[in-house]
Length: 449
Image 1 (cartoon, rainbow, N blue to C red):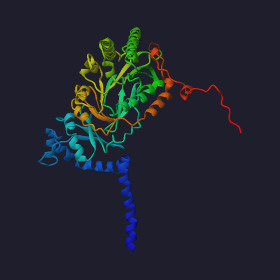
Image 2 (tube, rainbow, N blue to C red):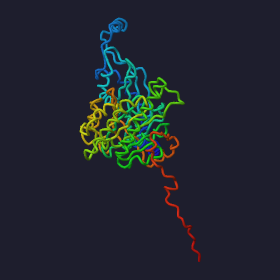
Image 3 (cartoon, rainbow, N blue to C red):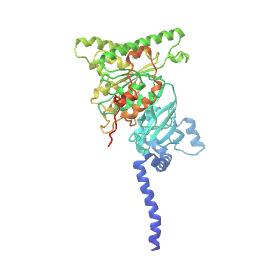
Image 4 (tube, helix red, strand yellow):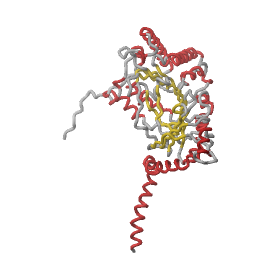
């Protein structure tokens, strides 16, 4: 009986702890990784580091001086190959980061090529390699799939035109820095998460002192709900043509201002004369290219020409482009390829054909095209983000409802600047009385017995 009591006293807490860890692994992976995964990964890394680097081909022959010292001071005949030196190991709630000093003979590309083998050797979910400075790389390991349930980091990037939009697969935030990457192209099929990406972007931009300008030729079904925070909105191709002309005129006026102050861009101007930055959000770019007859071709050519002009020149005037669409290719018409060349940032969600993925990422990161075509339909919001340096990463935007985005835009409506050049396209925002419905003219008389 005493043995059963002792077994019950010991087994019950162990079973409870095991069940709690199993629940945490499934429902709270951050907690499980911090309690169990991280200590195990650090021990596995420390014990197997040299052997793993050796079998992965990430070691080099030692220098002559090192070989001489080993043979004469350590009295060893065999001289072991030298792996990268571990400079720093840091743990986090999502993974582990290791800073390595590469020996002579190794380059970051060698470590990148072996990242998949390192992932399996150390039992982590993913390993991303980032070159921090010449001769140093950082291994960013994630202990679990951080894109399964997106939770943005608490630390927000600082900057006048810097906004976090999504979460990278290495646990860091994917940031849109308009001063570094002024124009971007976002592609994705229906139900791929493209609208969710744009929704998160608008919400983050709504908190900044910038002017948001929308073009939604689907009669405004996507962007009309953000009207309190929009300085201008075009919902038809005719309105879009006029709005683009107004933006080009605004750009030229800003160039005159820069010329007067001998400044390279508006960020060199004093704050009291600096115009507000403008972000142009195009919901479906194909609607600007498609025409139904020859009478629309002139309007189409003019709109495309104005978009290309903005892409080429508007960075100095702080007018930035966010072009979105389901399909983008040379078959859209004249000027599509020229416009794409001006859009440095690329984000591609799940697409319907490989040609769209090629047009989105094939010219800057060819290896990312296969990753786009592998995005499953049951994971909306997952995308591949690339840049002109050839690097790319998987990202996923947090879930955000249209009602929440609309509420944020209404909350920060006071930040909406009034631009005289865009005043004819300022959307009409209904007041609370108008939205509640008409007020009855006859006062009802209560019934009496």
